[in-house]
Each structure stands twice: as C-alpha cells, then as structure tokens.
Length: 343
Picture (cartoon, rainbow, N blue to C red):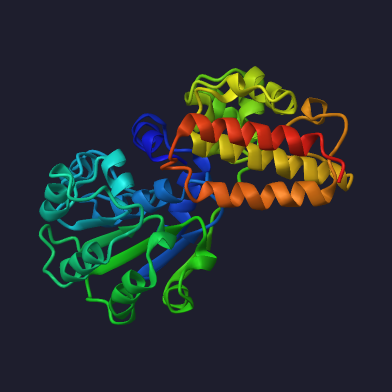
C-alpha cells in the first residue's frame, strides 16, 4: 500500500472483522515478541497497532483496547510515551507518527530526504527506549513496520534486545516479506501468518465502505484478492472500467490511459498484466483482470519473461524517475511491443 493512502485508510476505515478476530486470538497468548507475516494488503499494520493498543490500554477487555481511556487517546494522537513506532520515515510522516527531533530538523532543513528504510539511528533510539521505565505503568511496546525495511545493521541493533528483552517491553514486527528478515530475528519471535479472509467477507467489508457490489468485486480482483489494497485502489480515483480497459490500451500503445498515474502504480499494473498473460500462455486463469479483458493473442513466454525482468529493473527507480513523462512513454511502448511479440 502506498504511503500517501495509509494514513487516510487507517483513520477512516472501521476495523475489519478478520483483523478483530486475529487480535483477540493473539492477545490470549503470551509472548514478548510477535512477527505478523503475510502478503501486502492483509492488514499487518492494523493488527500490529491493535495489539499495542491493547497491551498499553488502561482498561483492556478480552477483545482488545477499550478505545476511550487516556492511553488509547494518546495512541490516537501519536503521543503515547510508552509506545515506540519504527517505520521508514516516509511512512512515519504519512501516518502522522513523529520523527526524532534531529531527523525532523534534517528533513526540514533539506539536508536529506525522508528515508525509505528503517534507519539504524531510529533503532538505537528504540533500544534505549526499551530500557527506560514505563511512564504510565502498563509496560512499553515497540511496533516495527514493515520489518523487512530494516537493513542488516538495523536488524542487528534490534537482535540483542529481542534476545534479552527488558521485563516490561513487548515487540510486534509486522512484515509483508518476512523471508527477507534475518533468520535470527524470525527465530526470536512468535510467528503469526495473516489470515486471508473469505471472498464474501471481503466483499461485504468493501461494500460497507461505500463501494457498490460490482466495484467491490472489480477492485478486489485488481488487487489480487487483498482487501486493503482493493480499498486503496477504490480510493485512488481509478474506475473499474478504466482498469478493465488497461490491457487493450497497452496493446494499442495508448499512453493517455495512464498519463495521470504515478510511475510506481503504472509498473505495478503492468506487472499484474504480465502475470496474467503468463498465466494465459499456459492455460491458467488470470488473477488481476477478467479473461475477456486480455488481448486475444498471447505473447510468447520468452517475450513475457523478458518484459517481467525489465519491469523489475524499472521498479527500482520508479519513485524518483529522471523524467516521469518519458518513463511512462517508454513503459507503454515496451508493453505494446511485448503484447504484439511472437518471439
């Protein structure tokens, strides 16, 4: 999920029933460190935040935090003295979590840009935080998301504290790519695989956010069955019709179909199209588009594999392209050429 929509979604969307159910099960178990893992769009951040809310709540219930006490309010306004949140700075800023005074000053003075990984300086501050006495007497909590954005130096700074945690601190690491974490980090946490909700449950939840039944189904398909990502797509201004028309637009080399899309979103959409064309080439059903939306003639697997590798390379610089307009033109031309390739 993109950083720009995380904050709005977190603040405006009622807790999904499958997140509430997982929260209740996890809170009934004991442990000082949890690793919430699974693909993106399944609610790792929401579940992690719900767990720390309950741990720190002044009047917790069997189901979680009360939502009304001073502790719950302090988390809501991002000022809880016993909660440390570790994220890449771009996500911290998008979600309203405060940076350290030095980090904020450096960014304000344009000495550097907000980081896209969890900085080792922030982790060292978190380790120091874990060793302090609880301010409110309910213990302390550290939330790390997405945990795979720790580099090896940052992860190693956390490792010793996970091995020998202070008595009143608990950790929750939420990850969308847990395989990228150090094995020593994974081994020191209780693991929880995020639940993939039932189709009907996800559709009902999306419709409760104001989507029509058809739009909910279309966006859920476009998101590969991931409810949080489906809601983000719905709120991004895209229409189901525009998504369905994308494969044919790419086959025609129509840049206007994506001219108002940021390059990372275009690459994500093209990777999904490439996936579905690969599936079609071996007789498997598509995942992100309806079969009727795909071009009739399917490119060769060689051409699609070449395109997939190229899109992976392009994704590395998509956040900061040299020229976004030229990049979009090149991406669409590459898509058109691949779709019409037979070699």
